[in-house]
Length: 407
Image (cartoon, rainbow, N blue to C red; front, side, top):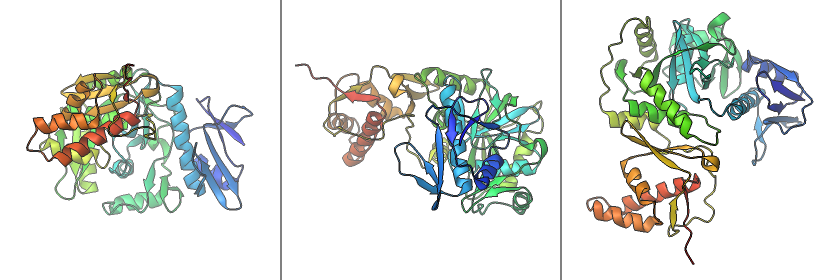
């Protein structure tokens, strides 16, 4: 049957089976849906056969799944449809928890510990606005989707007895991979609930040491926001400007912690009152912090890029795509594209220097030669590998195009 979810034009195809519908209702707790006869291409599809459930993704073979896994995939498709239908609004991978009347937003890469921390804060009685996707409204407020928080299984070693007891007492649908929480009362913000952002918090989970709160460097926060943003727009430049505005208008913090209880208790003490200034000294060892926050992904992050490098080779003469522009903010450089190249890509200082060379046709070897001359103490193979990785990333994203040779 075909379903349409509240607030979306997009539809999804699902099997009319009780176990799947039950899992979907428990996952999208407060996201109502109705059966529709709409003939448009669906945004997501789940099928069922004698061999079980299957997730259908564009251009890929069907993926076998449990009812919970299939429901999880469908919710991701719905979130993507929400982004597509609202291209001028920011949407982030990350979580948000309400302290008082404001949200502490935690943009974080996968497996950074955000869902575990958010579940622990829920156990302390805080209201969850989301642990995976947070859209913003036209006023810049965070908006709840009404989707239950999800924990990966098995629970991490840092999960305390308090958290394990809470998870057991509020068990939602689960399989071998995911465990959803059935939060009581208003602890899961109803769909459409909006709240102002109070702070951006970067999670820095460490192997040892006490929990600490530090002031986060603005350019580090901007880089993480750009990486964690979900964009389906013809022009990312406006969204980059909105992110820059967020960084300028909100306090930015880093929570360093090794013990979940220690970290959660520090957050509760820190944000107990928004009227009390937070004494958060600047973070130390910024380079190491960036490595932890951004690993394991590479430093660039372009949305909507091409999956293949068809036609690319190291000696291909390329040039910067004229629809891509360079933006600098707080000492950091970002590329922002339009049209088919819509995306955001962070450049380190060397990458910025290389981009400035790409105003004229060049290739990997030529740029590597220039850098080797400028940095004779750096191993040539290291330079060549770094240049090759950057060229391929930018070409894959459409930020570089083949130079036209005059005849």
